[in-house]
Length: 80
Image (cartoon, helix red, strand yellow):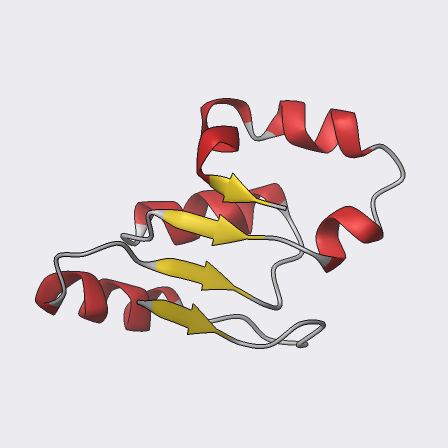
């Protein structure tokens, strides 16, 4: 299941929606679009997403390596 706000979106998929899908869908949930910070990525994963798809956050990052290091153990769940 892919929950997508759209590339460059000013808003992201709300955690409440992710939690609702997780409650009723037992497969893989991918979330993308409108994600701007590592904390948002962690919140999305905590809400039940299995994979987070990133684009703008990396394209606009001044230090992609540092950003990926900030994500710690979540890096294996992030698609660039």
